[in-house]
Length: 187
Image 1 (cartoon, rainbow, N blue to C red):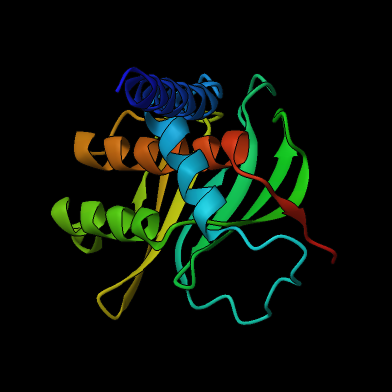
Image 2: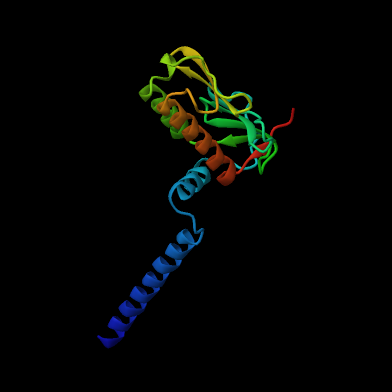
């Protein structure tokens, strides 16, 4: 009887050790929150060594951050596609310069579109002028069958909800660029 309980004890110890080891591997990335979520999604949906499809879907969200009078503002363009792709082009004052393609979870695109519906993006003015030399932010969405582009120069006359939306899209782009694997786009 003693021998049987020793075997059971050893099996329990080995099982516990295995669980602890696998838990350490999961937590070893050190990423939390949004970074961990993006990393987990990218590992599930990433298909390494496969050529990027030419059919990336329809453009649904576009953002452009332009130059400003100081010359130090980040400049880039990014286009989200309905097929779960992001095409990013770092122009100046960005850590990543050049054109890259990212495979992203469709949920990211859905969340942006839902936020746009919530703020009634299609009902906004086409342009919100500001002081000359302020950074231009252009967003264009294809939302519910309507294409709408809004240009904001600085933030003096634009509605707070629109500025929050543009900041949210910008933050989404930056999170993807910082945390997801990218493939250079050849022109």
